[in-house]
Image 1: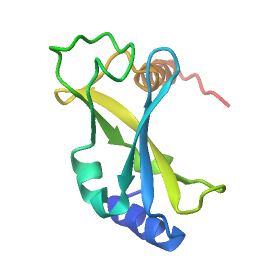
Image 2 (image 1 turned 180 degrees about the vertical axis):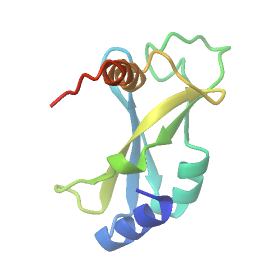
Image 3 (image 1 turned 135 degrees about the horizontal axis):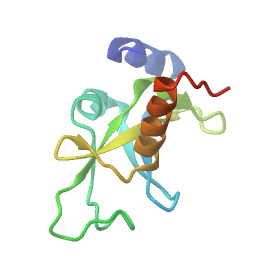
Length: 121
């Protein structure tokens, strides 16, 4: 989904807030609630998290922040709260994918499987 398609879908759904989410190493979701008025910044820059404060992310206080870059294709509106949606994010540190994020690890495993012509159903 392109950013323009995403913005159109958000408007059609009447969504006012989006959870920018990623999952840390122990499966705990880390999220920030972002108003849709900041969607352009969210898509371009991401949502910032202090890695040390976000939980066990293999970072100490001196390490740089984690930026959660949303995947527009993961957009989902909450049926129990229609003005709120969520997007899964790729956790990045200084512009590089954070190697310990479960989503990143899964993407790497799926890419290796595809190289071997393996398909998950």
